Length: 434
Image 1: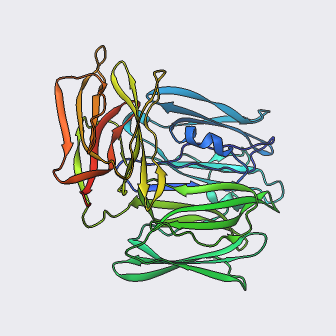
Image 2 (image 1 turned 45 degrees about the vertical axis):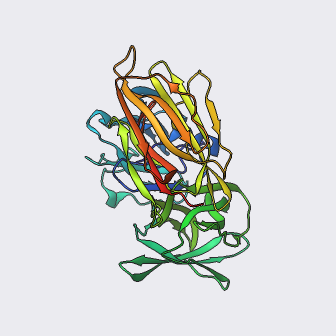
Image 3 (image 1 turned 90 degrees about the vertical axis):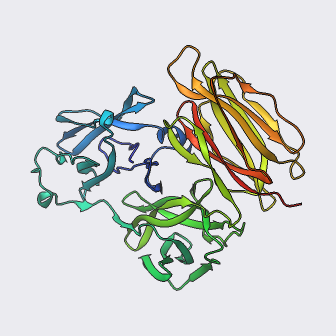
């Protein structure tokens, strides 16, 4: 789902997008390498859904663009990006109340001015008219500018066997993947190979790529950015060599508890300008089990995945129950910090620190119901039991209770549903071995 875009200067030069998870679909994460929002803005942008898109066209092209968002059911008015002059305004409305969401943006720019001339937005329900320069007919055939970058999308596969990277001192020129689909190898190449090609091989099906670190910077050509370096990390804790030169802005493609199942991105003049990834949950070890989550069915699904154990637990509360959870895990003796789930409140977030590896979580006791003075359905109380002690009760008891436990097993991961509250909680367990 598209969740934000920005540019600078009088006319729009580059239109970029952020993507985030649509429930019941595979996750797609983008690293868009254009002059855009700083990395510190990304975590807040991905929480929004688009509601209204405003754009104004003039004699030089699209002058400004503005996005109105929805967060937690409340409208958020976006800022104007660009400058307003003489011209015409157009608005594209998205009906988020009927689960309509933005899925793609297509645009055209002028070769000489590099200003964007037209944009077209597509949702899961409809496609906008071509929004743009008033002297241009609303048909693609008369948009004489170049289509914005050549995009590529490999889709989703069962795994990745090998990655090939070709690069120079200035940029990553080409990337090739050997994917696995139904036990067959499928090769996909993007960009143009140089004389220097290096490869990184994985022990599939026992090893998966879990994250990609990289950098990008301005290429000096038409203000287009280029990817300058890539590093791959795996589920076995291995880290590839650095392919390219670590210069420019850093980015990370990663979702806790997930493996990269495919890549997508953009190329321009034979080099890589952007790269994104599809994620799917890491396969559970053969002896791991996933216990069903308890609570209410509302909220967005999350799953931290399976680890060797739990090091720390953070719990945040509010007057209606449990509002925030975060877990720190251990994997191959490395600390792995899980994602935030729910919403931090003015009340203090409490920490439960385990004496890992000698101490491990064996059970979670909880309650769920509507809040004391609210119709919000959420988990109201949690209590964690280890092989050495029982924690205090976080929150308050209510009418419906549950116990997450399997005899002879320890808890090695959590999953559930959340919005601004924790609505549901489940666990991953593995046999206790001494």
